[in-house]
Each structure stands twice: as structure tokens, then as C-alpha cells.
Image (cartoon, rainbow, N blue to C red; front, side, top):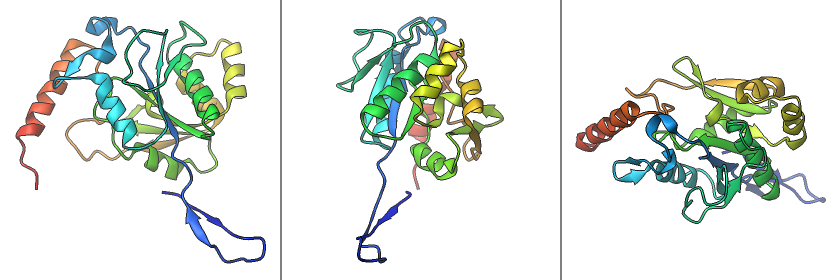
Length: 220
């Protein structure tokens, strides 16, 4: 994790090293999920709702979390703040608006926006993307040739996002490109793509099979 030195006005010697705050993490859970029969965040995988996997992943990486939804009462977020779309009907870009507003209110300069339907996301995602961010405003994973804008780390820039939406922009990928993005190639160190999302019953069945296989595989 990155650190910064804290010094006194009378000394050039660092007194201690203080880690910067973890980025805020916002889980996008506002999609209707029609291909999977609706209410995607609450679909069960291994006896747990998909949203539970996203919350566990976020909790492993940050102390500042929220869930972005279309409207109040859409789902139970397990006590996490619910962020309702301020720009309804625009898809994931609406979740990014909520994520930027939430992170700014929590004094977090960066926010990781993840989907509720990616149960196998790496638990070191925020750390690795943060290490690659540098002077750019977005760090976006690329896994097996596919860009992952809904698993990217963003520097909060509310004004730029508002301008983009005012010009009818709706693509996370295009906004990232306009902001200045570094693409982070993710290593293929497992048989399953950790960024794979669950959009339909076939994908859900495949994820169930993966969990069953993992449960039967002895750990070393």
C-alpha cells in the first residue's frame, strides 16, 4: 500500500509513515437483470445472494462502502448506505455519479466501482489498480482481452462527469478514455476469469459448478 511521510516544520526526518485512506468502494446493483429473471443482486449462488459476494469483496479492501441502486427500497443492502440514481435510466454511468458523490462526501479522492454480479473479483483489486494509477485518472483492468470499466478505480472528478453526461455521454469506457486511463493487464493465473459476470441462468449454473469444484479441491 502507498504511504506518505509526515514531517514537522523543524525537521526533515519523517516521524512516521501514514497510509492514505483506502478508496471508497461502491457496488453497482441497480440493473434490472432481465436476462436472469430480474432482481439480479438477490439471485443465489452457493446459498448466498450475489450481492453478498460483492459486499464481502468490498469489505476486504476498504472501510468505506455503499451500494448504488435505481431507487429507494429496491434491495436490502445489509446496512450499507444506499445511493439512489440521480440520473435515472442511464445505466452504469448513473452508478458512477452516485459513486463520485459518495466518495467526495467521505473525503475519499478515489473510488472503486464494481458490479454486483462479479462474485470472483480479486480481493487485491483496489491495491493493484492504485499502484498503477500514477498521474492518470482511471485505472481499468483488462482480463483475457476484455476491458473492465465496471471494475475500475477512478479519481473523483464530479465536474468532469457532470459535463460528460450533459453532452449525453453514457459509456463508462468512453468517459475513462476522455479522463485519461491506464489499462492494467490482469494475469491469467486461474482457469476462471475473475472478472466474469453473471448475466443469465447459464452463467449462474457455471458459477455454481465452479464453487462446487473449488469446495472439493483440497487446499495446500
